[in-house]
Image 1 (cartoon, rainbow, N blue to C red):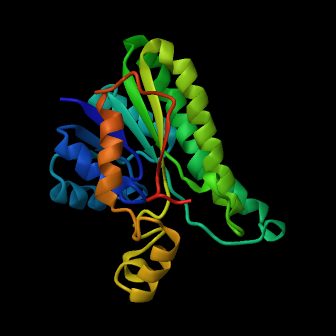
Image 2 (cartoon, helix red, strand yellow):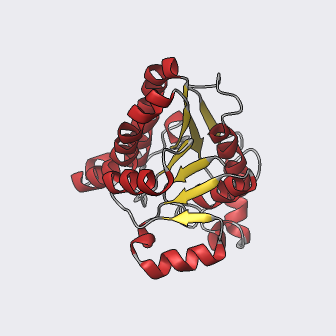
Image 3 (cartoon, rainbow, N blue to C red):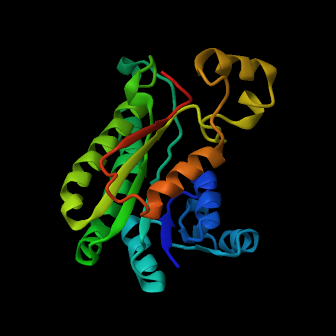
Length: 241
């Protein structure tokens, strides 16, 4: 059975990716900040009995625990998230850049560096980076997520070139207007009529993206079924911008 590592399973594209990977028959090794607590891991395991939540938090720990318990994954889904604060560029605290950089740029880069040598030796595998479509149309007040997500997307494209000779796929999924409690919570943008109307004015598809929809895309890119597809950025944004 194929093994996929999925980071931040409870956030952003994580829930949708989890469902789709399970349905695809993958054993899903799951990281999440809450899994530092043993009770949270056990609760998650009861709800998702075919998953393998891990206690590890840092990239070094995630790599070590995954390899020790499950071996080298067939696919690694780097689903990183960090809260967004809106601010004009001249007013952004440097710490906002630093914390976002560590969470959505350095964390996935570090994990890719750790797993890459063994993937090269095996000559097979897939990385799926979940970044953002924001780089396609920067919006006032959102310089931090726009620039940080663009950095990770650029790294993934560079990685795809170096990894391709070893038959390793590297692709990017760039969502925006994806329903998630961190960025576009249901109460405000789905259950509330005013929120739905706001989204309908912005997104050509007229609604938020469903987590299951982005999950199906991620599961395909992680499946290894089309390995010649690499170095691609697939925007999941309902026709926006």
